[in-house]
Amino acid sequence: MSDAPSNGTALGPGSHPEIAPSVRLKMYSSMWRARVFEKRVYDLFMSGLVKGTTHLGTGQEAVAAGFSTAMRDDDMVFCTYRGHNHTLLRGAPMDSLMGELLGRESGCCGGKGGSMHLTDVEQHAMGSYAIVGAHLPVAAGAAWASAERGTGQVTACFFGDGTTNIGAFHESLNIAAVWNLPVVYVCENNLYMEYTPISSVTAVPNPAADRAAAYGLEPIIVDGNDVDAVYRTALTALHRARSGGGPSLIEAQTYRHHGHSRADPGKYRPDEEVEAWMRKDPLILYRARLESLGFAASDLDQVEEAARAEIDAATAAAKEAPEPGEAVLMTDLWADGGASWRR
Ligand SMILES: Cc1ncc(C[n+]2csc(CCOP(=O)(O)OP(=O)(O)O)c2C)c(N)n1
Ligand SMILES: [Mg+2]
Image (tube, rainbow, N blue to C red; front, top):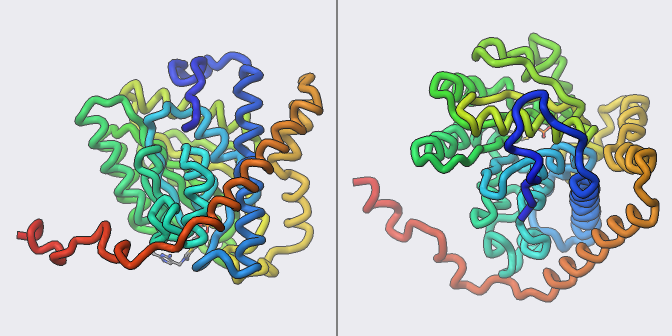
């Protein structure tokens, strides 16, 4: 589980001191863990071992790393089918995620869910949702439950730019604002839906931030490839929610390195655009920043090595794990078709 930094969630807006070196190293490590995970998923998919489809979060790691580092251990996360980064960095063990992708019994959903449904409730990773926009109202409900119970938990809900044109986005933002819910909605604006540029189907240039005013919220845009900026923005929004200040809507500007899903080579994107964003790779930018701040290159190399060792071990464990037996078919089901609770 990620460590909530002690200098973090107690702070109010605008009062964040310099980010501690240990927090910076943790964020660098988080981004590398997510990067090597996605790279391995890609390779295993190409060799036919990953069951089902995949939507990789490569290039978008800074959003998950900054948020997960700023969160309290019991804060909840809801995410989309592009949810590997968020589920991993919320604390789901890498081998259970890899087991899930390979359809093994060791998987976080017993091998039944696969890439688009990664969930680890014990770690407060509350699910990956394949229907665009479906999880936004559920996240509002989770936040409402925390408020009613007085647990102090905040719910963070991640989604794409295309989601801002779905009704559930507007309904959720509205109820979150009206009920002052402790929820932080985060739009990862990677400029595209499946193959369609968001700009070609949206009436405003900033698909999330430009809608914030409709719900009485401040427009917040953050460089989603700058993990420090994401972390500071997350601290402010989490603090606001936890201290009764209500929801936030954050637009994190970022880019996916691959196509939409495994079948998409992403050729509809102009070469110059892809190249410009590759130069803004969050891992490369952060390594340069850390070196300029005096972090030893050998320490940073060690972080990268540790991530590679972790993914090798997780892959080996997943490959060795058995496929689920037939008994798994009857687990986690309403065996009576839900008859008892429907009455
Ligand atoms: C309600 C609904 N409509 C359409 C789809 C098909 N679909 C899957 S992903 C996707 C694009 C979503 O884009 P965005 O919200 O920007 O997320 P990204 O994939 O870029 O992370 C679409 C249209 C779906 N899953 N659900
Ligand atoms: Mg998108």
